[in-house]
Image (cartoon, rainbow, N blue to C red; front, side, top):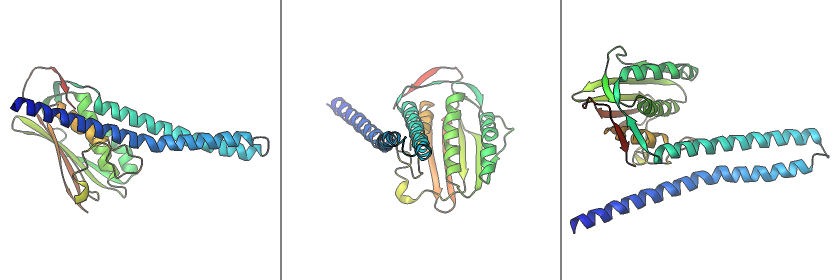
Length: 249
């Protein structure tokens, strides 16, 4: 009887999560699709006026095409992020220096950070923190956090990141000096499709959490309004063999 109740509860959770994802995706698709349809209609009208004022019609048509291209790219990003969230999350664990991952991400993001008046600091970059992880997947997870942190500091600030051992596991921290997360948004931050940023898909943090959980880890955060936010990844480092694992949604 208990097993039956537990199975029913598990099925109900899966249905609820699937319904939420489907509803969120439909909502995110609606706006760009509406924009595309409107601009296609306007573009067709412009082409009908081509003989009246060719130069002005050409300029309007080019603006329509730019809008269509932008919305199509937005849909592509949304679909890619959605597939990353819902598709199989297999991780191939290999001994990897977590600080080396962070150092490469710092080099990658430094030009954009400098352009936006953001100072990047990595704590103890030369200290090796070896852990069994999927380097590509974990890099993606941390990159999502770094991008999120940069977007939280539109007027510049300080972005700190670090990796260290913690018992049998490791901790990666990404801290920003941005506006922080308001109390009313804290329950929603890690949920799919939630975003306070214009043009954001709201899937980056959900993808990060899924990658971390596929490593048997956990993603948490602390935030103070007006002072910034710190995201923390905790992953186990034991288990010396490389193995395939598939994270569940």
